[in-house]
Amino acid sequence: MSFIDEFQANLESLPTILQKKYALIRDLDKSLQEIVRQNEQRCEQEIEDIKNGVRAGNITPDTSLIRFSDEALDEQKHSIRIADEKVALAVQAYDLVDTHIQQLDQYLKRFDEELRLERENAAAAVLPATSLDGSAKSGRSSEGGRGGRKKTRLATATAAAAAATEVAAAVVAANSTGMELDLPVDSNEPTYCFCNQVSFGEMVACDNPDCKIEWFHFGCVGLKEQPKGKWYCSDCAAAKNRRRSR
Image (cartoon, rainbow, N blue to C red; front, top):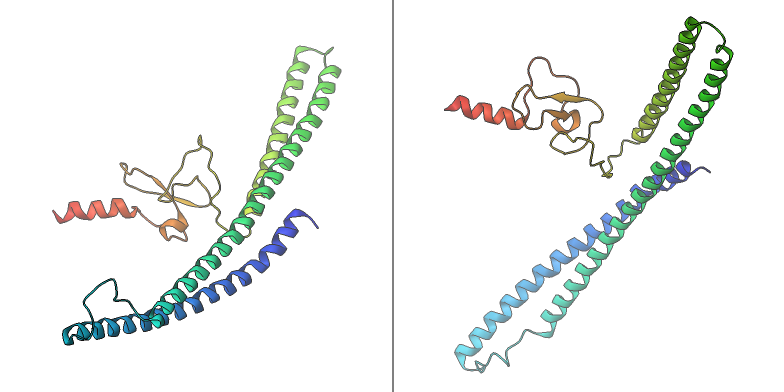
């Protein structure tokens, strides 16, 4: 089984596991809310009883001797235990997702290394053929030499086109799962849109020449196709409306 097959197999079970943990958190939260409600009512009643006892003289007004009942304290301790269980389940869910993200990062690095090796092998295969072609034409006229250089450029362009095709296929394969990952961005690569991410997929430009962002991803601005006519981002549209209302 390849790495990507193993990753997909593990990923298929992730939603079910997360759903179970979220269901447990929801049930614990309902129980916690009920216990907190009961404890608030009990404490309010006990405080009222203490006040009445102090007024009647049955209870000494000494704060060091006044305390809630054992039942009220037990309810509070139980509430803390339930809250701790909720936190533990949330941490487990986070760790599960983080583990899958790390596995995907490893796959992307491995896939990128394989693409790099394929490009290097393709370039190495082109260079010997170019060298032999140049040696065979070395005794010919200058016109033949120019033809050799043309073929060299053609072979290099062909190799570059093949490499570009491989990279495009890699991008399509990486996006086929429909997952959006918070992967590190190259500091030298420009970012766009409200999400401050690099350029990907279909994008639309704001028609305001003074727009600070300029380009936006379709998904971030709720578009499914290129808008007809002029289009303004929400910031520029709001500023434009404010100017009109003055």
